[in-house]
Image (tube, rainbow, N blue to C red):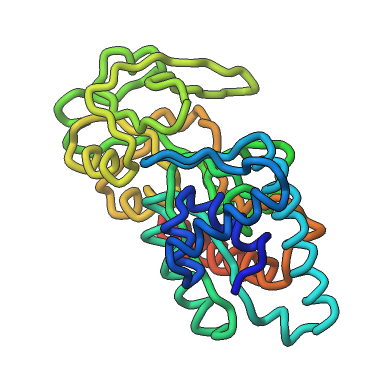
Length: 302
């Protein structure tokens, strides 16, 4: 039977009593009674419930913050007392972006789980920003700058970005010789989060220029826009991680190489460095080692 803290954190994370009941091996009526008993004991409503939605009250937000912190401290205490053997057991929850998480992080986690059978690995894929504390996530793997300066981060892999196009596109429309030429070219835009769509930033000798390009085609899926570029539909900005093998084979060509673009370095970020479990630290070390090896291999083929 889960403790009240574990029960409430699970309900808050899943935003559903029935889903929490399934996760905790309880019946939905038992979960409803458990929540009612908590609210009666505390004398406040913790959750607003309707037929379709569930949201935390202000008191529920306070309870969740303290519950999450206490559970993390209890886990840390157990690991400190029981030593390394216990550190090799338990759960690690990871969040990653949809495309990269599916194609790269998931296989790496499979390898990690094979080496550490006592560690339970859970992977959640989402392109939307996540609240690590509220969602109970140990670490998130993301490209680009860390979204919240309160978070701690470790660089997993450097990852430059290139302007590129397929030879068939360049044969038909010509090769841009200056940034201003991009205004007349067909461009493929990868729409990500709140980034300014179609505004591309370039730097040269410490001077930054922003070019507004016409999105002949656009998508929020990185694999989709890369496929369109390979098919010759336009000019694209893509990271070296994705583009290296196509540049090496000649299916893509780098353009305007005298300019640099903002990097898309890969980070693992987490809420608290001091309270990070030994399991999570071990996983971050594993990912950093494997991704750096993979990156060096890809770049050696470019």
